[in-house]
Image (cartoon, rainbow, N blue to C red; front, side):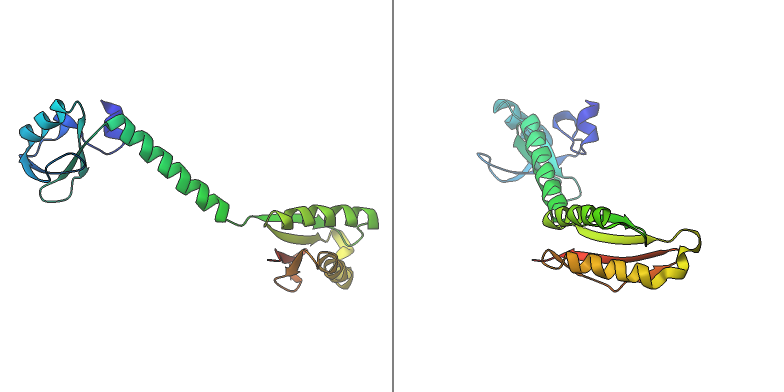
Length: 174
């Protein structure tokens, strides 16, 4: 009984209003007394479910309640899946001003994989200690990174320095 309350739908004897509006398949649409609507549902071996409690009178439907919950859960799951499919994630690649050529190419290949999966890539160069004096070296590294990803994505912004980090975003090509 508590499970039915969790979903927000009152069923059968939980409906305590004097009259309800019946809608649905194989049912005469109209306003009925709650007892009469409940007896119609029992004769059909189905449940009387309050769909819209705020209406005057409340709207009820005669359906199999468990099947109704199952279908609703499945629809909600589908819409959530569609929402997640449309979201773009941001993947971060970290570099330093002294990143070696092999390591650089390795990170470029990772970024290409991210861009192929329709994710944005945030390339970040972290300056440690006195490396901050080589800002131009870091900026050249980021521009080289964007150039290496040229056929898979394009830069959204120019390299921007925030504290000891310089970063830019690369978006996938359509």
